[in-house]
Image 1: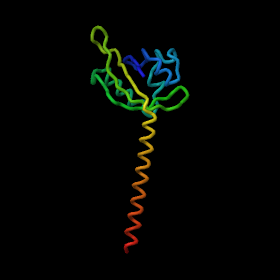
Image 2 (image 1 turned 135 degrees about the vertical axis):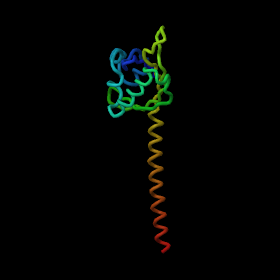
Image 3 (image 1 turned 30 degrees about the vertical axis):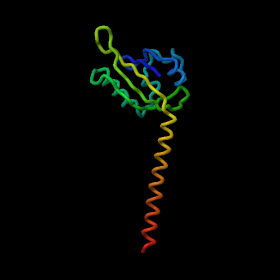
Image 4 (image 1 turned 180 degrees about the vertical axis):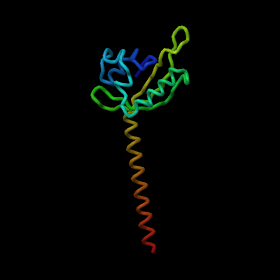
Length: 136
């Protein structure tokens, strides 16, 4: 996915792959605020803060940042992003360019593994307690 945002977070460019993944036509996103359309409300402030930090010049790139996006149908996608600032011909920051990869499947597998690991820890603790009690 490739997305270009202006300093206010409005979509300036988006590639066909991103539109396809998100379920939107390009004209439904161009000129619209990225954060209010595709970013879940619970992470919106954090992502706006990261974007603001970039366009203010506090950092030039953000690598390997992961967050969820909402598709037009309401499905959640887990995306890994690499972002860099964009500058105009005068060298002034005028937005950022972001490339993202859908890692939803691997994120789901990691969550399942975490749950399994937690359940194993609980089972081990229970068995250990049972063994300790049987010794007495």
